[in-house]
Image (cartoon, rainbow, N blue to C red; front, top):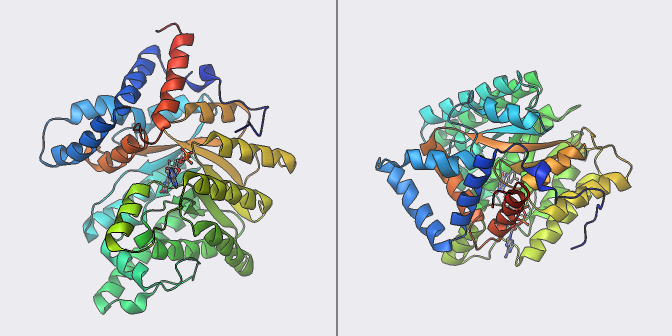
Length: 407
Ligand SMILES: Cc1cc2nc3c(=O)[nH]c(=O)nc-3n(C[C@H](O)[C@H](O)[C@H](O)COP(=O)(O)OP(=O)(O)OC[C@H]3O[C@@H](n4cnc5c(N)ncnc54)[C@H](O)[C@@H]3O)c2cc1C
């Protein structure tokens, strides 16, 4: 596809990898080459979670390879090294406390406290305007699943959580979830840090959307604190985005929208097939791209009332957003626009957007190795040969290695 914004180019690998030493670049080359082997990724993603669980001594290998590439550190303080380096190149950071799959009230309370620690820490840094949360970090998956199953209109935003299907104990449990969400968002509002609520599996998403929208209604009045994530690999989400906007206009709050394509495609399709319901995923990549770009256009069209985060590694989508801003005469530092890529991926987009004066960040997960394994496994799958992303990353890394005469 032609570059819709010829003044910005993502081909400059010197800018893209300026923050990496020769040694780091060689390591990235090795890692992405390995992820090019589909069978290796399949085996690795199956064995690693098990090996960590039974305590096999593989943490050292993980720490020096995939963890270093995609994660900011094991503790909040360790992320400072990466954040400081990125800041030198005008790149901001979205901290992502990488806890996944831990259940139990104690763990949920702990995660809530950790999220608040992240907010307080981000508020002391120059380059951390947002942080991200996962509702499954502080809510039981099966509880969300039960609430989701009770939602009648899957395609739109109903604006309420169907607590009538819960028994008394579960209702109290849900109230604790809501209280944790309030605690996190009010801490963020007090420190003026944006909270991005990640989108997860379709079968738990409805209560997450409803709760997030309720928070927006309370906190997104004259500035934007809360952002929902819209996964445009779902065929119903462009309508959902427009519906959310309508609700925001009616209730007079600003919509915070982080647009992604979506990370759980295979899992979603597999479940739909196994359980015999129509897949919620778009029929093709082209359909996901079409809706993603339409979502970007819709948000930029209404940028006075929507704060948009273009969260993507797709060059065309990122350039198209920049082009639309210019066409509308909107400044690159408009407070309602932000771009973001995952740490360890698509540095060519991030660093060249920063060079063009656009606000851009890296999503930077952190946490103990055993906690971030699910995140790492998703990155391995995303970068395996099937997805085509490996080719893209490797091509850029090798181009830069050649430029530095390393190969
Ligand atoms: C900052 C940031 C935050 C993120 N937060 C979330 C989040 O909260 N929730 C979440 O789910 N993901 C999240 N992601 C992950 C994101 O969903 C994937 O990185 C993303 O889908 C990759 O797509 P892309 O936009 O980079 O573009 P591309 O690389 O061009 O597109 C790849 C994507 O297209 C879609 N796709 C590929 N093939 C097909 C097909 N045959 N049919 C239909 N669709 C297809 C899939 O979603 C695939 O991941 C986040 C990503 C970023 C950068």
